[in-house]
Image 1 (cartoon, rainbow, N blue to C red):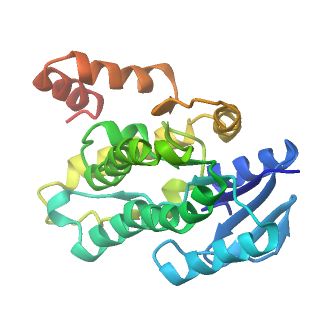
Image 2: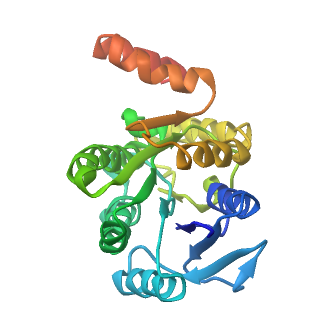
Length: 267
C-alpha cells in the first residue's frame, strides 16, 4: 500500500519539486497551498491549507485521514522570506513571518501527531534553512524563525521517541526558486541610515538565489531521509561553503565569524 505524504507549500519551488518526485517514487502525495487552482497536478492531490489559519490545517488533515485512513509523512515546507533592517521592519511583518515559518509549522505538527501516535509510526521533516544557524544581516528575522524551528525539532524528537514518531530538519542553502519574488522586502528608504548597505545586500541575496542549486537535489535528499530508519537530527543541503559555514561558526571565535560575514556581504 502506498505511503501517504502531506507536503505544505507544494504549489511552487522546493515543495512542488519534492511532491512530484515522491509521486514518481510511488507515494500518495497531498500537497497544499492557500488557494489551490487544481485538485491534481502531476499526480499530486492539492488541497487548501493556510498555516496561519488553524481551521484550514484541521480541515486538510481530516480530509486526508478520512480518505486514506492514515498519514505516514509530513513535510513541513510552507514558509515565507523576509528581508530588511531589523530596526525598520514593520512589527506586523515581523509577526507574520513568525506566524508562517514557526507557529504555522507547529500547528501542522500538532494536527498530525494524534494519527501518527495511534499508528505508532510516522516521520515529520521540517524544512529549515542554513540561514537558521546564524544571524545574517538584513535577514535576521528569517534566520530567527528557522533557527527556532530547528531547536524545537530537537526537543520534539526526544518527546516523541516512545511513540516511534521520527522528526528531523532539512536545511537548504540557496536554491533556484521564486522565493526572492515572494519575500517581504522592507522598503529601501531614501532617508534611512541603512539605505546603501541594505540595498547592496539585497542585490547580493537575489544573485545567490538565481545561482542556486536545482530543487531536485532537495527532493532526492528528502526521499533518502524518508527511507532511513534512524534519521539524523539535522541535515544540511547546499554548496560546500554554505555547509562549511556552519562548521566555521562552531569552530571560530564569535567575532572572527562575524568578521567573515561582514566581509562576505561587503559591510
